[in-house]
Every structure is written in C-alpha cells, then in structure tokens.
Length: 480
Ligand code: GDP
Image 1 (spheres, rainbow, N blue to C red):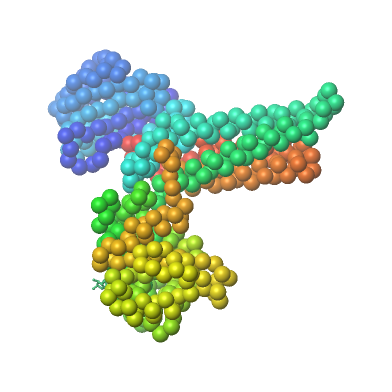
Image 2 (cartoon, rainbow, N blue to C red):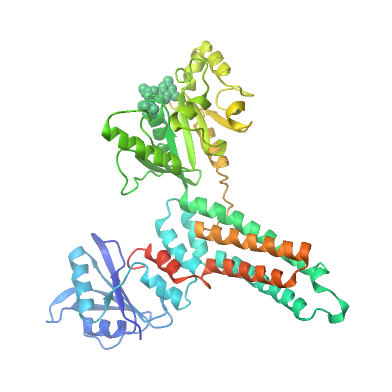
C-alpha cells in the first residue's frame, strides 16, 4: 500500500479544463466518495458532479479511471477534469486531500512510473525535456527519447557488454579449453573494439542531443556603440527565431533566448566592461565577468571604422576587454559595420593592416593568427553589418560549426549526465583494451568491463544512486 498522491496537472490560471490527477491505492475510493458514484469503468469517461462533505457542489466534469498496473504510474490513477479556474481547482484539490490524498511532490508521478518499471530514467527525463523544450527540434527529439529510442540503444550496448564480460570470464575460468587462448585469439578484442566504436557513435549523437536540449550560452562583448544591441536585435529578429525572456534573470545584463538553425542561444549582452568607481556599475561588471567565465562562446563585436585604430588588433581588443585572451574555440570576433567599409576604402586598408589574416573580404569568415599570444592558434572573424543584415547568416553558421552543432535528422535528446556516463564507459573500455592487448590480464579486463557496464547502466537507471534520482525528479513540475 502506497500513499495516494494528488496534484493539479494543468497550468494554474484560467482555462477551459483543469485536471487534477490522483495516483495510489485510495484513488478509486476517493473518486467514489467525491462523486457519490459506486463504480467507474477503466479508461471510460464518466460525467459526474464533485461534492463537498456537506453535499454542496464544487464543480462538475469528467472522471477518468486507469486501473493498476495499466496506468502512467503503474498504480490506480484517477483524473478529475473540471473547469480550469484557480478557485475551483483549489477547492477540488482541498476536498481530495480531505478524502485522504496527499500533495504530490515535484516529479512524484514520474518517479512512481520509474519505480514501477513503466519508464526508465532516460524516458522520465525526456518527459521533463519535452515540456521544457525551447525549439521544435528539441521537442521532437525528447519525444523520440520518451518513446524509448535512446534507451533501446543503451540497452543493446549493455547487452553487448554483458556478452563480452561472459566471454572474458569464461576465458579466465577455462584457460586451457581446447588448447585455445581465448584472450589472445582476437575475438574478444574485435568485439571490444566494435563496442567502443558504437559507444563513440552514441556519444556523438548524445552530444548533439545535449546541445539541442541545453543550447549554448553566448556572451556579447565590445566597446560601447560597437553594435552589440544591434546584433542582439538582428539575431532575435530573425524570422525563425523564437524570443523569450529567461525568468529570474537580473536586468543589468540583458538576456535573450533565440533559436537559430535549430540551436538555442542564450544570449547575454554585457554592457560596458571598464574600470569604474560606481558601486552599482561595478556589481554589473562583476556579473558580466561571471557570465564571460561561464559562457560557451564569446562574441567580440567591434566597429571596423573605429575600435581597432592605431595599429591594434581585434585580438588585443579581446585581451583588453576580457582581461585575458580567451581560447580560440571560445571566441568569435565580429567585425561590425562592414557596410561602412565599402564607402571608405581607407578604412579597408587600415583593417587589413590591423590583422595578419590570410583573406579579408566582406561577409566571409577569415582565420587569422596571433603569433605572440597564441602559439599560432587560429582565431576566427566574421564580417557583418547589423545595419543591412549582411553576413548575419554566415555568422550563425560559423557559430553552429564552432560548437559542433549539426544534429542528425532523428536526433535524441540527451543531458550532461548521459555524456558523463558515456565518457566514463569509454574510459573503462580503453582500460579493458589496454589490459587485454598489452598485458593479457584477464582479471583486470573483466573488472574494467564490469565498471564500464556499471557506468553505462546509470543512463537508464539500473544502478543510479538515490541522491541522483532525487535530483532528477526534483526538477520536474508538480503533477508530472
Ligand atoms: P552597442 O552600444 O554596442 O550596443 O551599440 P548599438 O547596437 O547601440 O549601436 C551603436 C550605433 O551603431 C547605433 O547608432 C547603430 O545604429 C549603429 N550601428 C550598429 N551596427 C551598425 C552597422 O552594421 N552599420 C552601421 N552603419 N551602423 C551600425
């Protein structure tokens, strides 16, 4: 006997329908007491009135009954579909509590589904990801993961690993069987290498899925009037972009979330990085520095007609603005106001002198080298005009390429947690490979394979620790 939990499953506010969900052994009896009915048939909608203890009517609507184990949670589930008003829903919920249900915690319905083997962890996470998706591609990937595609891949790999372990353990237990040395006959090595290659493939897919889910954090920086706001507007104003404000962010650094070419960009505009005595401005700058440190990508916007005069280079400007020179893979230099260059050929010459780049034409990506500071690593620059829109498309494509975003048609949603587990699995498999090929150490091969299997199974939840479960389900919304 478990407790019976209840929660409002629809968003609070006004709506045609509001749904309260109950799950647990008392759900059916509560529905009977609430409505005065004595019987509900599974999966059939019954129109009822919902009553207070004194017989007054709270609301009327539909009751849906899903009998255990044929329900989302695997327990008896009741859905009360009333009208979607805050007062009505709260009164109905209070009455359900009076009849013996308890308030559900965030994610508790999904947790029960997981606990009753209705879902594995990947699927449970996919529910939350589908609800929170910021792009159509992320939503459809989450739904694919929910339907079990990702879990199936992981389970197939787990099965392979288990077979591999059996092979190795048999080789240890029967070393002289038929005069064959199983460990060195190449079969185990082949199988191991195949598994490694397949996990590499899943990791590559999962990386795309993680980018789809989480997007990237991008910081725009530059001197005042370089065109940062114009760039933000350009990016946000693209026809394909969905613009939302991230809840709970402070107003001192402007944040926008846009989806471009399927990639979610969390853009932060850092206003004016400079030395200042002003306390409030200092706090703002400190926040900007934190944003810079945490960003996946830094966009340095400069005004080609002004910001790099006097023989300095954009790389020196980056060094100045960020305090230290960011790694090339984290920095994209945006040469803005390219429309003004064609009107003034002197400026073009000046720009070319300022960079030691290989090619410098409008609206293309150029790679240039800062030999002193950077050991020859290439920094990329894109020329744009926020005024005319020239080069913006190219900027978006360069950005996607820089973070390695190219989701396949049928991508699957993934989380950092999954990537970690896959990477750890690969480390153990590398160890197993070394023990096998270099040392022929059967026991150690077996042990590394066991650890690899353990890491991989964390993804779907077979070996997950309780605190991890708490963290995953705690981030769900109530009623899910
Ligand atoms: P921020 O201070 O870096 O945010 O710069 P703004 O976006 O406010 O731009 C400063 C000024 O430059 C504004 O007057 C813009 O209209 C102008 N501006 C921005 N981008 C371009 C561009 O590509 N070409 C031209 N000609 N002007 C631009």
